[in-house]
Image (cartoon, rainbow, N blue to C red):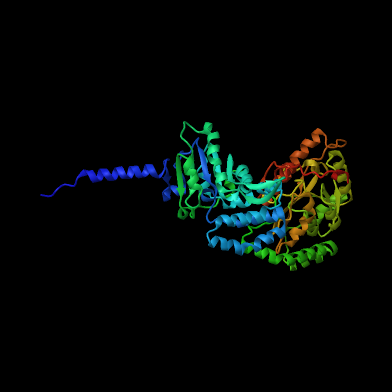
Length: 543
């Protein structure tokens, strides 16, 4: 007779498993399955709840290297010499990684990058320069996983808090950022990173402050990656924790531009590429040659006629694409017979826009400016005239210039790097019954030819010329009719209303030709966001 197994061992095993679960962790923890890792938590699971998200483990795509971001801060806030020092340290940083001393590697990069820099300048770089590159690293699935949340606490273990705070709060709508702090004295960083646990302890304090934002006491939810130490901290304070494996994370896709939570219209900085070690090494190797080529190109455009300077610049790698030529001679003769020249209205990409229009026309023009540096005016191969920001006076000056010859205006008032058109100032539409729109677009591979720093703006054309293959695309469009102000009413209410409609019409024509999105942003919006001021140089109107 066969004996039946006693039920005692099975009951004992069940009890042992229950005790092991109770001892292993105080909070209930869920690990995401491969299917759930791709889609995130179940639909509606995070609605109205506080979410604690691991920046590197959940938001960013794998692999994520911190070196390019430290290089960006070193170059943009500290200069090219500081970036070169960080580049020379890269072999030692790799050795520390092989030895497993990742914390020491992070401290070394922070010391070289941040030592002596002003806190305000690093905060500006975090808000104006780094977001463009961080957004390219964000995973679409990682961001969509918590779009129904009530509040978000972002935790980073790779970057100092100051480097990611501006990006996370301004572009992803994060409510609080937890990370390692950098020691500072008298408004300048000394470069020492504070211990990691000191920053991580703030997670619990922040969740207590956000207690009122949780729904029905459901508790916070953690979204973390499998690697790193963040998930150990998050699991202590969250009722549920979803852990994403590295294998599933590699299948996540980059976030498309049209799905950015906040549109990336403005950004600053000189570097137009992600400065990985190989890319930064190539830049520093090319830099001496780039300075020589830029000087040669500037000299050619400043001294030689356009029929000679344009082919010479093309021989050095600079490309100018004339998609559609200037208006025919009949229209030009009609404008001259009516007295004065033609008014060319173009979007604003760099300070070289009027020069490019003049090269396309192969004849001299006059460009009106607001706060261009005296050095740029001195080196400009065309005539420039300053405006005062007084509407009546500026209208008189522009009308006088237009009566003497062709005039080029950029109604946006400032440059925009991304495929957007800023709001057009309507003053140009009050000067003549017809304007010629000129669609301009640029392409660079290494350096941006625009900046918001007042002391460095005179270098903008030089940086554009330093690129190995800079490109300008020029397209002269069909003339657009405008409604000038009535005689004797310099910008009166009736004339000003018609000029606004005409300016919007010209903006729409240029946007359709370029494929750019129209916005209502202005020069003031750009400078308030990137530089914290209105972008007006004191005394500039009196010069």
